[in-house]
Image (cartoon, rainbow, N blue to C red; front, top):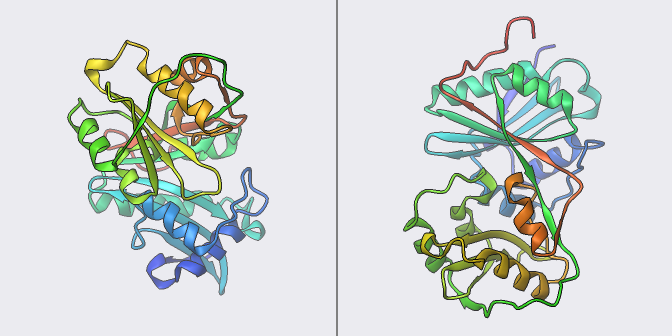
Amino acid sequence: MELTAVSALHYSCADLTHILEHCFQDYFVPIALTPETFALRFGAEGMSMEDCRVWQHNGETVAIAIIARRPDAARLAAFAISPAYRGKGLAKSMLAPLFATLKASGIHRLYLEVIGANTAAIGLYQSLGFAITQGLTGFKAESPEPTPKADLQPATTDELLRAVFNAPPLNLPWLLDPLMLTRLQCEILTDNTGAWAAITTQTLTPQLRLVFVEPASRGQGHARSMLQTINARYPGISTPTALPAQFAPLFIGAGFQPLPMTQHEMIWDASAPLYPRAGS
């Protein structure tokens, strides 16, 4: 089947929103966005219109890939195939050339997240040279227990970022990068003893996007106290399904419960081949 790959530069934001919703029909997690929320969500993630692709066949939309980009790294932020074209073995023939183009343009590391139950997609990405690096999960606040809470004060995104970048570099998943906060409507809170939290407010319900404790204040219970206070102040608040699973004891201990869906972070880097494995 001959496919034509078209840069997203040839489409409007409204067009891309419609294509994305169409291609995600009946997937594990359907997508429903307005053009405004599409632009906000993927813009904050670093969407590169030049690198995003829409595939066409005889005038019909076949698939879409949303690519987020940083200087030497990129992320497959979304990929979906239209229902009429699924099950035809097309995914690898679309993604392999796209990833090769990104590599040729100076990308040394590629990221993506895949739902843990989507074994077919995991196999696809492994055949393209990606490896699972860690499990990701999300949490939702439950009824808080009567425990002492931190006295939180409002702060600015700039103040939080100064604290983050004065500390040793953080190895966080793409969606938890603090720089994303510069593109989102946020409420920043601090306990003035080295603990910080960022809560995004552009959606109908607030979302906890970052908890950070400065190095000198770690190991003193500040993160747990911060989470307990947020639990009490924002009933039912949740996080993205992007937190490393190693943080589960901290969140559960502060009265949060894991969300049902889990994901795998998968990464390809320059030390691994970027082509389908023989026999795959």
